[in-house]
Image 1 (cartoon, helix red, strand yellow):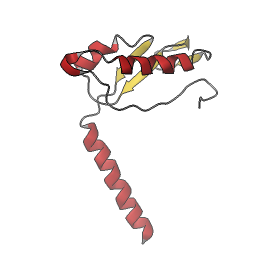
Image 2 (cartoon, rainbow, N blue to C red):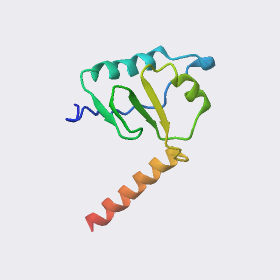
Image 3 (cartoon, helix red, strand yellow):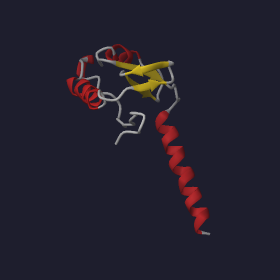
Image 4 (cartoon, helix red, strand yellow):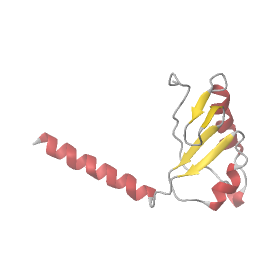
Length: 108
């Protein structure tokens, strides 16, 4: 489902670099499918200040990764921004623990 402004949010797991640092055709095809699904809608990319942008903005929550950065160039019509959250799995675990504490307090 797309927002009225044409924006979509999808979630993916860690990009597949592939054995021996080979490109992942599956990942590239998935990125292209998302772009193709949104081609009919013009959007505004407020991060870069562009209007009528049909480029896909990929937000990678983890730290800058040289391998991913090198292979992202094969994602046509896409830009990758790194959010540089340290230890993303530890952050996720902490979030689950906070939710459990909140749920336990709510039951009291």
